Amino acid sequence: MKRRLFLLRHAKSSWDDLAIPDHDRPLNKRGRKAAIAMRKFIRAAKINPDLVCVSSATRATQTLEALAPWRRPPPVEVMDELYLASAQKIMGLARRFPDSSRAVLVIGHNPGLQEFALLLASGKDDADVLRMAEAFPTGAMAQFELDCSWSQIDEGSGRLTSFVAPRELKSP
Image (cartoon, rainbow, N blue to C red):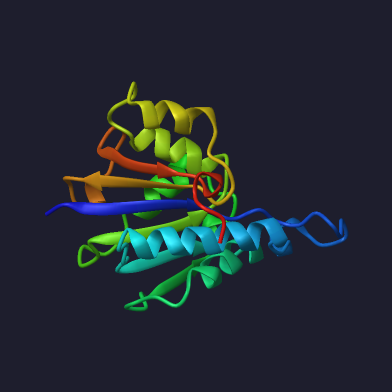
């Protein structure tokens, strides 16, 4: 059974108030616009995850909120362990996704999200993989197809089918 994994980096956050702890920084105006652009892209691409795993950081949960409403609202797991998680930590979390989920959206942070995406990608010389290696901007999303169960995810087990950044989309 084919599975799909969507890796979305949270949208741009605000640095206006340096007294706010990193975990609690909200989206800025540009980030909200980018998240809305990604919502429109997700709708147009008919992406309907069975499960959403999101970092507990405010900027990540606000990115998720901007993606609503969903055609079929997926179950959401807000995860402290996704906050600034390493590639290996994200790999471990992905291996625990329920087998009943065929499409999972993960909303997290760099550098771990980008490093995980690059570990997962099977076509290391693919143009989108090379572009993703150069930069994984805020609000960008990588889509992978996997021919294995979640518990079998490993290096090179995913085929990158799409990589899109908000700036590549029409303004909302």
